[in-house]
Length: 246
Ligand code: ADP
Ligand code: MG
Image 1 (cartoon, rainbow, N blue to C red):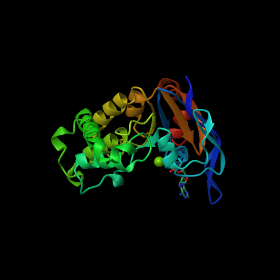
Image 2 (image 1 turned 30 degrees about the vertical axis):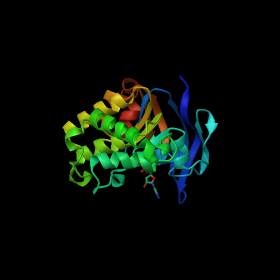
Image 3 (image 1 turned 90 degrees about the horizontal axis):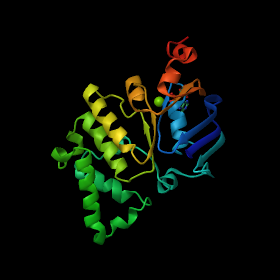
């Protein structure tokens, strides 16, 4: 399997403190890959480096073998590498339908910019309807996003992101703050969304990781400690020690 996204010797310092230290990492095409590790391990920093929301202090990032270290997030989006919008980017005053429409309209590149012309409005409407039905948001289509439950907001967040049909989807703790039922629902949606694309997620919930991930990278203190399947990494004494503070 080809590497869609790769980090080589990637480091990021904050005032002399190395949050990510000399990380080599490869995201293989078509996989669901989880980055796990204790709090402060550098997972979000690595995520922000890979999504280009942070610049590395050292090292390189490659997309399909091409050096993209200097590219900004919109350029990555045009290449089909998209991170989920934060909930803060869901517009509380707009309905579910309008939010998905907005996501399509404001994203230039990815092949959707041409939709902004009036002539393409029916195509946008079709795409919005498709996402609403795929994410079981039918009942809520005309509800203002601000009035949705937290779980539904996260579903909407995922729907707005997937409306753009990314090749590579990056999610930082998609289950954070969710209850049992919502976790089940979003796990199913992520699994379903993984068909035909590559997903990288940072995730704390081990159940979710064992359910979803084909490949796992364990980070500790800014470095990669272990890689492999859930069974492989979860049985390693050094991984267990890192989680129990040993
Ligand atoms: P994780 O997501 O694994 O919990 P982070 O990547 O958020 O870890 O953080 C790793 C380390 O880097 C932590 O010690 C954190 O305090 C530090 N850190 C992260 N972002 C910043 C920042 N913008 N400025 C200073 N320190 C930071
Ligand atoms: Mg984090």
